[in-house]
Amino acid sequence: MAVRLKTPLSEKDVLKLRAGDIVYLSGTIYTARDSAHRRILSLPREELPFEPEGAVIYHCGPVVRKRGYGYEIVSAGPTTSSRMNRYLDGILGLGIRGIVGKGGMNVEPFKEGAVYFAFTGGAGSLAAKSIKRVKAVHWLDLGIPEALWVLEVENFPLIVAIDAHGGSLYK
Image (cartoon, rainbow, N blue to C red; front, top):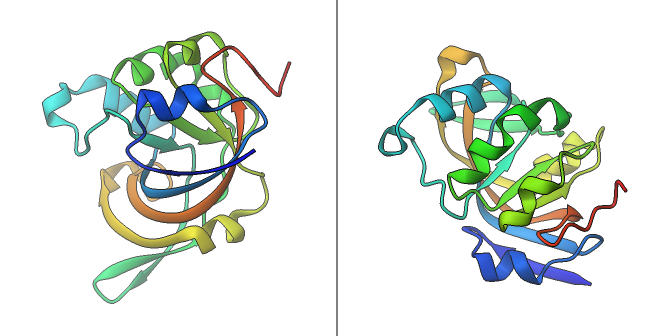
């Protein structure tokens, strides 16, 4: 089944999804890798530069080009998500409803009302085509790949790999 969703995701949106569903995601997503996850979890909620309720995090260290006063995403392939398992309970506990990456994650934490979307590794230029603009960037002190990039996406093609019911394409 193919579904079109817009961020922020509601619990109702997430509970309708099943492992294997194709999703075309539009709206705002946030990139975060190891350092950004640590920083997110170290800050009080009111100091976060985004609203986590319903948010979607993309495990990605984008290749970025400076353009005038802004940025262009050249490539935005996923990074391996399993190394972020140690942060998963805390991240989902903030109300984040979706994570995008490759390789899968622990299934149990998603049963609280979130989903894991898979994007094909090695297809970073395809991902970049769905990114319409960079809305903001935070924490450049972490380096470009580790910074928190705020991206506007349109029809970002994803597969539900882990659903909120315990279904997993990795089992």
